Image (cartoon, rainbow, N blue to C red):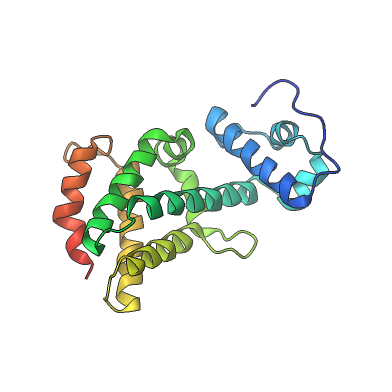
Length: 202
């Protein structure tokens, strides 16, 4: 929702509701026009909040993008948890990686961030927002916890390193595509994960 008049200002809404509406509006705005062209004023209008409310919570676009990145990470982990339910660690690695590929293919914001504007992913990877941790660290930790829950027995440090490795591979595959692996071909992604990723987890 990047043009036109937005909803009336919700000055009486609870702070948590206002923040949720801001992040939802930002996610739409970033998806529709791109991060570079997105305007903070447009996000405030679409969220139905004042500019001062928006800037009080997110002082600049980088902070807003980092918070949206945290939302993406949280959504991703929810989907991964469903995808790997009741699976062995090896099968969990495969299905989690396939689910990530499915998200890249189906989510317009993820595609825009990692394919159309890859230089902006540095904000997601390196910038902490509201003390919640960087995107890369948060995603890696969540994957490690998911694999541990499925029964992985390898030492914590090794599992953390492997989990970060998976996130870095996923980011790289979305940003630099070759003829050897098409991330839109889920059968190829599954075969790749079975042969090269699953053996890394014990």
